[in-house]
Image 1 (cartoon, rainbow, N blue to C red):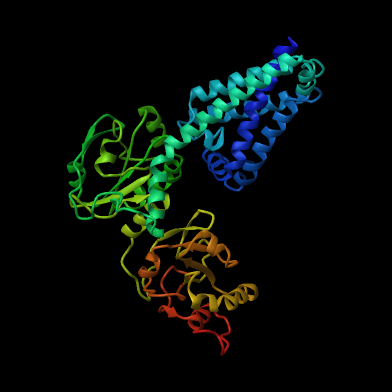
Image 2: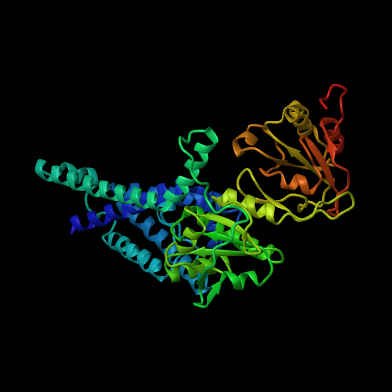
Length: 479
């Protein structure tokens, strides 16, 4: 019996160790999953760390003879919480991603997930039922009791299992991300001039005819390109896959675009894979108009080799280059849905950009009800760098009546983090927000009043920017 209990303990220890490490390596995904399960946003970040640490603690305790019973108790408690949380969400008709093993395995929960966790809980209960002093020897003690031949076969078998698991994991990841990786490699080669022979750009030429198609929706009703064109709005065809982690990342944005831009853009997710899995994801993220291709017939027709990728179709013609990857797709949608340019006295448009942590934030309006200054910036701009010291000084010494500063910047996340600004920085690589507010260069700024209206002309150069912030402008400040 002791050997059977030890086998159960080792199995549970491996499961919890893999789950804990995978979650720690993908804390952003863990936070997102916790929020989808109904955990308040303020509690998600600490729980995204505490949960995998608790799993690792149980994994470690299970291999120690003296601690094994307590490790089993902790495992049973965690599994009980998991089963209850999943069952409650399923009862409410919600199917969030379990994110049980981080990026290694994430899929919408179902009753099979409940059954799997219940089976693990049963194993933990068997160990608990043995009592604190009867859970078998520690793993190290058991190993030292084996003969040389037994130990050799054990090590060999464990090595083969680990190698097989590693190879399978690598193959799955390579197959799932191969298309996207190839697109990125091609883009990098083009940027560095490393191509030795000409190759075609991804996607179809702009202004070429969009290939026709007819696909079934999740309800089984066929939908054609011609039927979608009849709505008279531009179409965003977004190619995704249920096994693609980057696709999963962008699905909440896709649902938001469908809600917020329905008056000027129709977003059509084109996925493939199991119908029930796609239905679960559509319900989880509140997606609409999801179409299913059998394999990759429509994606291939549009020369979309990787996922996620997207292309704009207008009046039956290709209206944009193929956007590959979440960031490129977000930029395409942002540019496509930009409102008309505004001037002083106009209501500021409801634009949203991502901050340096990847969170969506309103550009022109906030919850504070305070006057806001939008500063249009570029980390590689010499004039911006010349006023950086003065800007930081204003941040340190600002009064409580000073306006709220929001920096709308080009450049990478890393380049903007290196600035060391205390104010929120929103990324606008295409300078679309600047164009809407009339900014033609950097640094420049515009004020938004407490009622959300544009309250100034665009101020260009450091003195004008600092004046809008209410800072003292020294004579030597760069223009």
